[in-house]
Image (cartoon, rainbow, N blue to C red; front, side):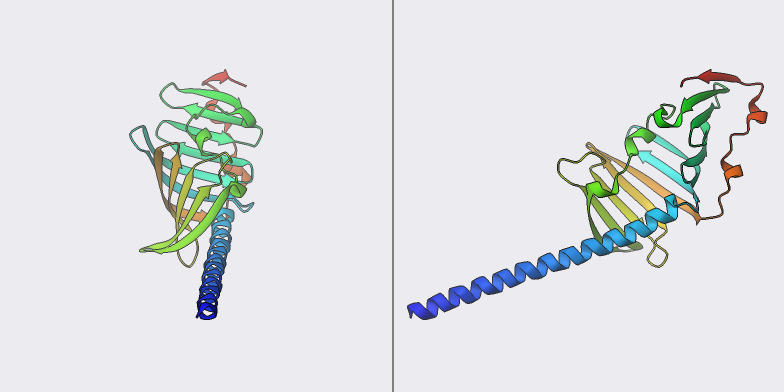
Length: 209
């Protein structure tokens, strides 16, 4: 009887270990798939080919804005109701529409838009998972303990193209929702991102480098 009990316990332990290993393997496969799909989407937005999209941002109870942004490498441009900004990789020219003046910042120390500074992202600082959603694929990123960055990111992507649909981001205890539309990867030229100095020669420039 004791032998049978021991065999039963050993069998149960083996089955339990096997179940745990199976779950871990599934989790690892899910994580790898999530990382692969997220990287694909990330490169479509931030790759060397460039991209453009329309964004609608809602930082709950604090800040709302919408506009269009263009990326290519280290260069970018965004346009919204309160400002238009050009980043040529070295300098950032920000046209404050109400003040009708242009602020000049260095690209490495751009304080012209305090909110965008909160969204710095390091891909290696997160654990990844993926799940089916009603209207796409939901990739979830959770900050690894001890690392710095946004605490949680939920990226909703189109199933076939992996184009971004929306992103929800948690910073401290605050959730930010970014709805994305009119996304296009590629076709961005350096000329599209150039600050048109000739159009602002009669405006006041404020040097904040």
